Length: 446
Image (tube, helix red, strand yellow):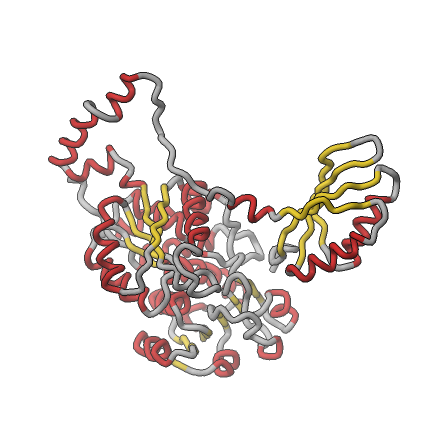
C-alpha cells in the first residue's frame, strides 16, 4: 500500500536571508538534511545586491525536531533565519468559513425583491405549503454541524470552542466537495436532555443534522432520540461516517487477500463512538464474527448486546484477521503483536495506535491510519444524497451503498480513493439517494 511521504509530519516554512553566492543555499539545505529535516518547496521571495530571501518548506516530527534544525541552520555562515512561519496557523487566522450572499444588490429595487416588500409573498407561500421552504430558502441545502467538544479528534474533551476549527473544517469540505452549507453549532452542555432539546428547537433552520465529536455513550442516546423526534436526516459522523469508510476499506482489503469479509474475524480495539459504529455497520453488512475490547465495561457490554464478543487486547490481536483500532492511544499496538497477513487500520487522529509503515514491516498485508481512512470520504456524499432524495433519515442500506461506492473508486492496490476526488462524492450521493428511494424513507413533496 502506498503511504504518502511526509503525510504525518508537521509543516513549517523557514524564511531565510542567504548570501547570494554559489554554495550558500547548498550548505543550508545540507544543514537541514543533517538533522533529518525533509525539504519541500524552495521559493525565491526577493533578490538584492548581496543577499536573497527564500522560503523553504521543511517537514519536521515535532517542535523539538524543529529546534534542532534551527540550531544547525544558525551555524551556517551567510544564512540568517528571519522567521519561522506556521502555514497551518496562517490558514486558520480569521476562521475558515463565512456567510456570503448568493444574490447581488445594486439598486433599491434589488433590496425590495430580496427583502420587504417582495419577500412577504414568499413567506405566505411557505406558510401555506411548508415544503416550499426547500425551494425558496437555504434550509434544504444547509446542515448543522453540532458538537459539545467532548471527543475532539484524538484530543478528547477539550470543549466546544477549542473544537471549532474542526467544525469549520467540516463546513469547508461540505462546501468544496458537494456544495452544502455547513453551519457549526457549539453547545456548552454535557446534559443529554439539554442537548436533545436544544437541537430539536434549532432543527427548523436545517435540512439535516450532523452530530460531531460527542463522546460515548451520550452520543448514542442523543442520536437515537433525535432520529425518533425529527423528520430530517440525523447522523453522528464519528459513528457512521467512520464506519462507512472502514467498510469500504475492508471491501477492498479482503478482495486483495482473497478473504470473504462476512467470514473474517474482525477485531475492534476501542469501543467508543467510532468503534461501536463500525461494529454495528459491519454486522449489518453480514460480518458474523466481531471481537472487541475496551477499558470501559459498559462498552464491552454494549458490544455483547449487539452480538459481538468481548475480549482483551491480546485476544483481539491473536484472533482477528482484521484489526481496527479507535482508542486515541498512540503506540498501543506494538509491532510484535502484529500477525503475518493481518489488515491493520489504526484510525486515531492525530497519532495512530501503530504507524502504517511499522505495521507493514511487522508483517501486515495492508495497513492504514486515520489520515487516509478518513470519514471525510463519506459524510459529504451521504448528506448530499440524503438531501437530494429528501430523505427523512439515514439508514444502514444507505450507509452500505455509500461504502460500496467509495470502494469502487479506489485505485488498484489502494484501500480507498483520495478525499479530494469529487467524482467519488458524487457517486456516493447518487448511491445514497438511490438507497433512500429503495428503502422508502423519502418525504412526500407536498
